[in-house]
Amino acid sequence: MPMKIVICGAGQVGYGIAESLSAERNDVSVIDTSQALIANIRENLDAKGIVGHGAFPDTLAEAGAAEADMLIAVTLHDEVNMVACQVAHSLFNVPTKIARIRSQAYLQPHWQDLFSTDHMPIDVVISPEVEVAQMVLRRIALPGAVDTVRFSEGAISLIAIECGEECPVLGTPLGQLSELFPDLGATVVGILRDGAIFVPNAVDILYAGDLAYLIVEQSQVRRTLTIFGHEEPDVGRIVIAGGGNVGMTVAMEMESRNLASRLRLVEADPGRALNVADKLKRTIVLQGSALDPAILREAEIGDADLMVSLTNDDQINVLSSAMAKRLGAKSNLALINSPTFQDLAKHLGIDAVLNPRSVTTSRILQHVRRGRIRAVHSVQNGMAEAIEAEALETSPLVGQPLRDLDIPDGMRIGAITRNGVFIRPTGQTRIRPKDRVVLFVRSDTVRQVEQFFRVSLEFF
Image 1 (cartoon, rainbow, N blue to C red):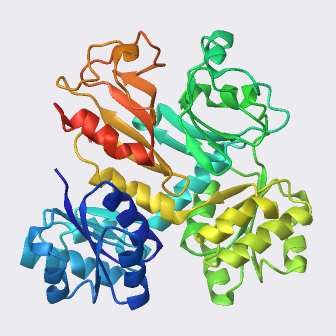
Image 2 (image 1 turned 180 degrees about the horizontal axis):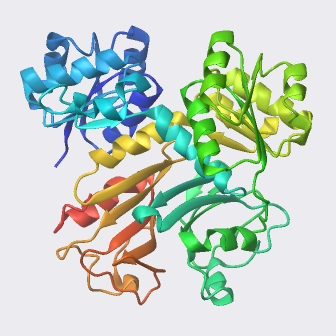
């Protein structure tokens, strides 16, 4: 049964969520003060667009808040998001309220009761800065992977690996990989080729230039990267551009985890640079522009293993990453919001891109999906999703060998955990109740997969 969802905010995140949810035939209404953004919603999505203030009662009423199953507040302003949730709760009794809160001042552990039902009733708080910082740290800890996210309490990872000209497994049918490496806990579940993602079968092969998505047992990640031709050494010397919430969080975590033998941070704002320098213990902080070659040389960019550009300006992140590479940095990683810049990144010599919209959308979709969904990760701006779900006794997945199941072409089961034990699925594998199943699903198949399971189980 479709859900009624009200989204406050029609920016990149709001649009992305509305795009995903409306495509699945949910009843979606989007509120924003910008007439241009709402016009974009009305013209391109099967969703209702309302020009107005997301926290105003009359605007929420017009959006159908009285019948809504969920309110998702992702405007650019924390306070609007918070008040929208309060109004949705107090006046319209909306069951589930999700808010994006960016300011860390609201998220300190000693204020954790602020968002309880008795105070500011928000069921799920999403902090993009914290989520992105964690993603950066995972990338740094796993050189060679373009994308990485963990499932099943860290026992399973989804990793994306670029297949270069020297990749040892090029031209090998994927079914043969299981024979060549019978004890390897890894399954290729998706391939990005020529701008499109598809779910491969046993006879498909990898070509140079492909981006392969694998679901891997965590203990086998390094070995899997080696098999695919990536034996990059651990990163030791890192330069961070940007001392905002993301850059500061990353630097502090790197210090606490000893992730870098030498760490430099470049921040343009003098006051912010002083503040960052006071809080960091072992990081050298340089005040200046990340686009100034002299500042980058002072940060010893020529000896850096990695340049991480995390300012709030896409253009600075793109250009500073490209400049760092030209000045001798071995690799780079850039935070990029704009889809246009993301498409250009590879042509400009940027090795890996972080997309805050994708990270935030993934976290929100995790709470929108119905049933026993444990985690969701959006892939390539929503082209596909990796989903972790729990199987119940009534699921059509349970009991039969996987080869006998009518599984849609756009879906692949990549891994199962049973009582904490990893299982690499084969045709003979039978899923049992309470198994954790990690799936890779193409976006145009999500709805079909949802219907496939809903006959006897509200699995999604």
